[in-house]
Image 1 (tube, rainbow, N blue to C red):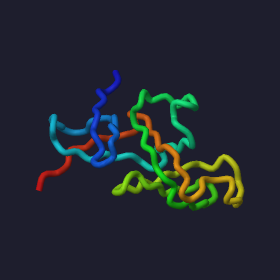
Image 2 (image 1 turned 180 degrees about the vertical axis):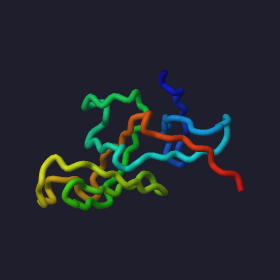
Image 3 (image 1 turned 90 degrees about the horizontal axis):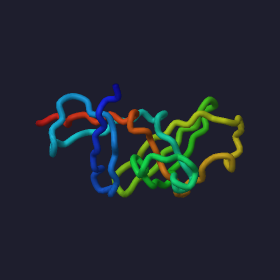
Image 4 (image 1 turned 180 degrees about the horizontal axis):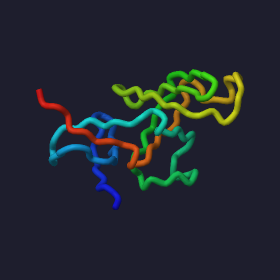
Length: 126
């Protein structure tokens, strides 16, 4: 049986994030969204144009801040809106130090993530 999905508006981003609720969440309660960096995927075009269909769920337009090639994978830092930076870890498909083989600083791309890889956690009250 598939756990129930939950939608959460991401503050100041004009996107809805769909994920798996954890704990006792109530309607209107503040929540935290948690995603492991290796579960995020970068898509260089609008996701609908390349068969990565999520029905408009969990697609965020971002800008590449920097990339770091570390052998087995590349770590990419992206900026979403004015307030969010996300770390994306992509396994390398090719072994090269050629900077043209990876995303360029300032490049606009989309971050996508499957809803089953998003945890929605209740925010602790002070």
